[in-house]
Each structure stands twice: as C-alpha cells, then as structure tokens.
Amino acid sequence: MVRLMRRAARLAAVVCAGSTLAACATVTRGTEDAWMIHSDPSGARVETTNGHQCTATPCAIKMKRRSEFTATLSKPGYKPASVQVTHRTSGAGAAGVAGNVIVGGLIGIGVDMYSGASQDLTPNPVTVRLEADAPPERVIIQ
Image (cartoon, rainbow, N blue to C red; front, side, top):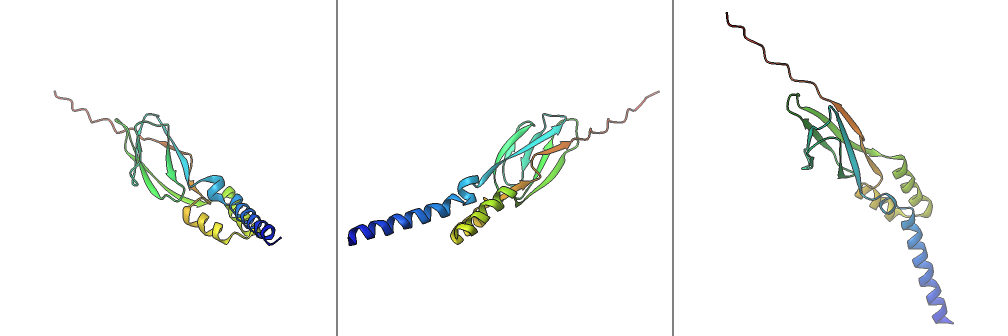
C-alpha cells in the first residue's frame, strides 16, 4: 500500500510539472523568430549590428526574440538606409505567461522572461523604400 501511494505521489508530481510547462511560452513559441525584411526596389543587401546578414531582399533572418539591433540596407545606385528593431511582449507570448500564472508556474514565468519567448521583434515584417543616389552633375565643356 505504501509503495502504491509513493507511485501515485510521483505521478502527481510529474503531471503537475508537465502542466506547468504546457502553458510555457518557451515551449509553445520558442526563443527565436523569423525577422522578415523587404525593400523597394528588391535585391538590397542587409547587415545587422548583431552579425546577421542576407545577400538580397526579400529575406528572412532567424533571430532571438529578445534581439535589439540596427539593420542597414545597401544597393548600388541607392543611398544606404537603416531601420532600428527592438522587441515587445506579444499577444501570444502574454498568453503563454498568463498560462503560467493560472497553472502556478512561477518558474515558467521566469524562464519565459529570461529566454525572451514572450517577446516579438518589432517592426516585423519591415519594408524599406530605398532612395536613389543623385545622378552626378554633368559638366559641359564648350
């Protein structure tokens, strides 16, 4: 009888721990997101201050949800353009954190906040209109 009660207690502990993780945004959303960037005209090179790049827009770069960076776009014949990207708590991430509160998962809340799983990159997606370089002045020799 004692052995049966111990097994039941272990099973209850495993079920409680599992239900805490089920509402955890880290599990349901992950800690990375695809940051998408488009340019007008397309085909611009993108470099970010956190070391990521893509050779031509449109493109998607896998980033940590907690990332903060500046992306610089460049294309021959156009002026370079930059966009600042940060993060904010998303609706889905907030739901995961709320699920932790309901189930009583204080550890899950801490994990979600630390990992950034409750965050979304913003702006995402991004569209940047590139401005053409001024044509060189023509010198007329008479």
